[in-house]
Structures are given as structure tokens and as C-alpha cells.
Image (cartoon, rainbow, N blue to C red; front, top):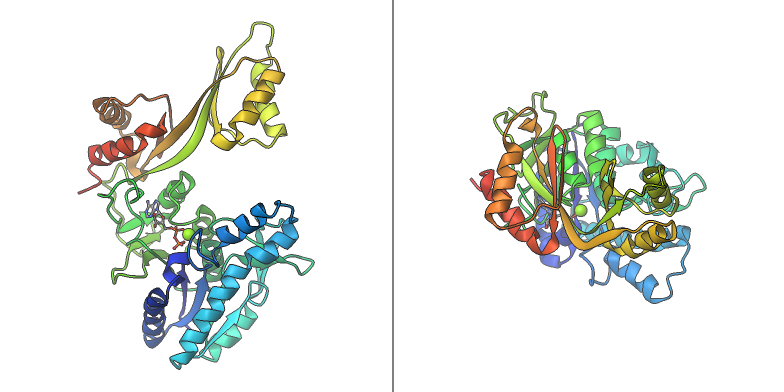
Length: 403
Ligand code: ADP
Ligand code: MG
């Protein structure tokens, strides 16, 4: 049996017209001889009645007092709705289809409600239905806890469902259908010139996803990488085959080796905090980061020097962070509304001049670099959010990503 996983995101399912495209992709692959497992997200985005964010807002408006276990029951509803609606549409076209929930599909997780981790998958029921030539629709994002409660897998959880099922079923490929033509060289909401990448390695895309490119969840990429199952990120609404994510050394695709920079990603809404060292506080660095950890404030972009510590937190957590630091006797300074830009490339390693090009691109635009750091595969710069779009575009052009 040649198994194919097809995952459809929120916008791909939100209207009858969009679902029409979804059905064509399913029918085409079935006709090509694949046993198909279809993983669905909740319909639409924030504001639409059955979107996950709408459910969250509903509970917030209601006093925000629902415990995580009960919250998961609500959060999982969006996928149940889109799966059943899709099932009925397929059946009305005489394509026989069945729906399985996360539990029904044998997706066993731990009990961390809201961000559960998959422990194991028992795919017997899926396999049986596939043998009966059913299209198996699985509600994405859902699992089941050891106690039998519904769990959800966190943001981008349907991507994880798709690749985890791909791994458990030994699928030939996992197709992630979305509203863009593939993985683009930058976020199309800021860089109109962003171009779809034909092929990328798991490592590159995992890195881009971690640095803010929301097109696919990094956890989903890790799972596919471990099982060496290729992923295709492609458009529900266009006919192209999108971006193939596979192993650099694998034989699925000739890998592009002459590329220093693959793409650019960004995370906005961060505050830069600077804490100066005090003569009487030798343990200052330890104190600062212990305080942050103790209060669950996640820190990023950390620069520690003998003269002090520089780091970022999300804007929402900044006030709390500053209050804690002041209470601890420090005199923190902060700059809110910053953006961390990541320039990512598997071929960047050992290439002199990438940083120089970044500095050049940003200086030409009069953009101040507030902080920077680099690794083998990524260079990060912190800029003001008001400079972010200009910075993304300048870097995109400087590295010739529009070509
Ligand atoms: P889905 O609902 O299909 O899961 P998502 O919203 O999770 O869709 O992901 C697709 C969106 O990711 C695109 O519409 C685009 O705005 C955004 N995006 C951000 N960075 C990138 C990138 N580098 N390539 C493609 N899309 C990106
Ligand atoms: Mg998504």
C-alpha cells in the first residue's frame, strides 16, 4: 500500500469554494493509487466562528477560568467540525471517507494539556480503513492522554499530527497544503517579492520555522527528519508542487549547494532589556536569569559580558521582567517593540562576508542594529519594529533572494 498524508490548513477549509479545491487534491491522489490519510485543521483564522483562536477568545471574554483539561475539550472542537464537514462533502461526491479523532487514530500523548507531546501512535484502525479503500480523515492537533482525556498538541499541532502519522504509517510523502505556494524566501506579508523555494533541507526549514516562519511547525519537521519522510509544502489553490523538504544527502532531490542564504524570518513584539553589572553584585548574571526562569519569563538573544547582560523578552512579559529586576536591586533599561530578524542558510558556514552584507544592507537604509549574534547557519539582528519591514526587504534584495 502506497500511503500519502495530505494536511489541509485553516484557510484551505474555511469556505465551500476552498473545500472544493481540497476535494480535487484528495480525488486526484486517490485516483493515482494512493491510500490517503487527510489531516485537517480548524476552519479559518481568528474571527471566524470555528477557528481555534475564536474559542480561546470566547473563554477569555468569559473570565478566562477554564482549566487546561476542559480547555482542550473546547480547543479540539474546531478540527472535529472541519473533519466532519469535509467527510460529508466527500461522501456527497461518492468518495467513501471516514473520520477518526486523535484518540480514534491511536495518537497517544502525555497529559500536558495545551501542549501535549506524542508518546506513541497505534495506527491499526487507520490501516484497516485504508485497506477498505476509505479516505481516512483525521482531526489534526488532537491526542489522547493516559487517562483517556482529549489533549491538544499546541500551535501548529496539525502539522505535527501529519508528519507523526506519516512516520507511523511509513508514508511515501507528507503534503502540507496551505494558502501560499510553498516555503518562501521570506514572509510574504512583509516581502511581496518572496519566492517559493524548490527544495530545502529539514535543518534549514526547521531553523526558519523556529525563527518565526509560521508556514510549518518545527516539531513537525523534526519528526519527518527522524523518519526521513519527505514533506511537500504546497498551495491548496494553485497547481504547483511547492517546496520539497528532504534530507540534504537523500536521493529525493538534487540539493542546491551554491546557496549561502536560504531565507529570512522574523519575530516581532520583543523588548530588549539591558542590565548593568553592579560592583557589589558579583552574581548578577546568575541572579538575573534565575529570576526570569523562576517566573516563567522566556528570554532570548542573550549577550552576557563582564559589564552586564543584554537580552530580549516578549513585549507582554516586559513589565513583569522589569519589575522583578528592580525588586532585585538592579537598574534595568528597556526598549520595547523590537523585532528579531534571522538570516538563515545551510551554506553560510565558513562564508566570509555574510555579516558584512547584512550590515551594509541595513546601514544603507539607515537602520540601527541594536544587537547581533551568529551561528553556523544563522545570523540574527535586532532592530526596531518600525524598521522591520524595511530591513526584511533590504536583506532580501541584498542576498538576491528575489531572483
Ligand atoms: P495553515 O492554516 O495552512 O496551517 P499558516 O498560517 O499556519 O497556514 O501558514 C501559512 C502562512 O505562513 C502564510 O499564509 C504566510 O503568511 C506565513 N508565512 C510566514 N513566513 C513564511 C514563509 N517563509 N513562507 C511561506 N509562508 C510564510
Ligand atoms: Mg499552520
